[in-house]
Length: 305
Image 1: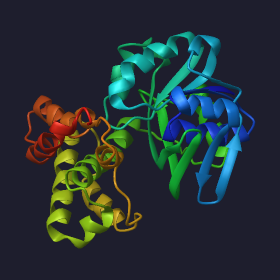
Image 2: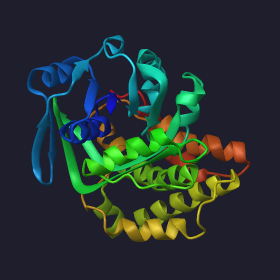
Image 3: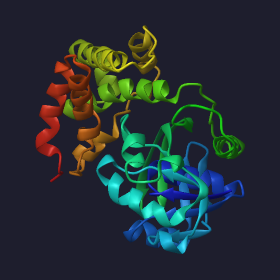
Image 4: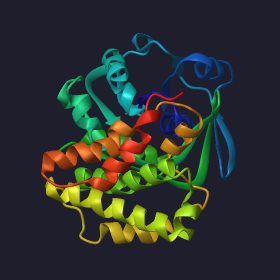
């Protein structure tokens, strides 16, 4: 397949290396020092099994140089969606699929307001990665799962092709019969992970060992799940309990990207996480005091230092 990663951050970079080493043509869209390092030395994935490096088919900040591709792995920060979506236009062929792997539950709708709707799918990523230094993607832990589908969750050859490519490259891309449910299930977890680890400047170990933090975390899980159900999402009744049980098996040093961005003085995605939960709760006619409070606590840091 001919695949582009927009942009080539933690998620895009992870898949760019895996898919490239599996023999696919991958165009990495990046900028600045990260782009320069990829162009000169290739893109390196530093994971639990060691470092792997792939030299992409194209490394550029000009999507017009890439031309039409079969699939676009779309993984940018929420605030950069509009400009990154517009940059995808020169790479759209007749049947190109754009798969968003963003935090939150609104990315597919936002993309479909900019790109032709027939090109937009929906998806979520379960992987802990970050740009460790220009040209190097660092993976924490071994888990990596990418769930995606057409927005109506119906089977399609282009989704099947990308799913097969990711599975054959050594990652996991399971099929789903309800992508909206799956995206919301991750959002339930991430609303708590993001809000609590950022506002509390803490880790999973702190949350598990501090009863008050654990209570807050569970309250946010339950609140966000109730918002989804109020909007008609088919979330399991015991979703928040199962997520809380799974938290105990997560790496003890784990925290959300929001917490890492806060520590490093970078802009925060809170408008698409805690802020989105509060906004969607209002739309659904339910209360979301926990998410609203976390959003308020993080709001002064929204634009970074």
